[in-house]
Image (cartoon, rainbow, N blue to C red; front, side, top):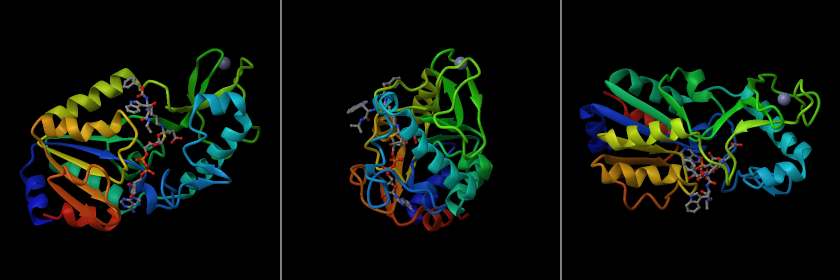
Length: 237
Ligand code: BJW
Ligand code: ZN
């Protein structure tokens, strides 16, 4: 912990990758592991275009449920610690796989939303994208003004990431002196591959996770525990 704290103090360029574990202490379930169940589904099963075209109403029920949880949740000490860290270094990029927007609500500013935003909807017919911030949509599946079907503005399995965002994530990772990876199983690609890219670029790799992951052995420092307790200590001056 002391060594990791020193690396963060000395760093000029920090990149952070977060996953669902960073929002777990805000009451938002993770995808994999014990919390990752919704009705009879594994939580990642509805996250495909195939599931959506087979049953858009069912997939929207899952999103409606999650939107309700997220709307009722607040950023936790892990989100807040990352805001403090951003204010301390000249170059800071927060790359998140989370779609919940809690990093923005906490006050982080330079954020790359790799997997999109749960508060955005996009029309499958006319392609228009807009914010939809009512937590519970009254009619499922929701429809666009053009009559087309609306889908959540997120990235599902088998879909490409937004090119500009992915480039920004790669660049920040390559440039980083320290790469901090928090609350992600890192099994979903390409996000999970950023840690290896950071190491190749010479960054110190610090992992914070409640459990061991496949990243843990390659990390320069792997801190085991809830992000809401570990991160505030890690960024102490
Ligand atoms: C705590 C904690 C606490 C708990 N404190 N820690 C290479 C090899 C094999 C397959 C592929 C490959 N490249 C691409 C693929 C295919 C696929 C993929 O990765 N499949 C694998 C699963 C096998 N990837 C894709 O299809 C991606 N697209 C793509 O690659 O396109 C090509 C392209 C690339 C680049 C540019 C252009 C084009 C798309 C992936 C989309 C993923 N989408 C989802 C849903 C998003 C929408 C939504 O939220 O509804 O993203 S799936 C889901 O998994 C979600 C998450 O962001 C993502 C990652 O999950 P995360 O965050 O890691 O959560 P968990 O639950 O897995 O882990 C939580 C962790 O927290 C655990 O470790 C806990 O221990 C820990 N934890 N409490 C600290 N309190
Ligand atoms: Zn439309």
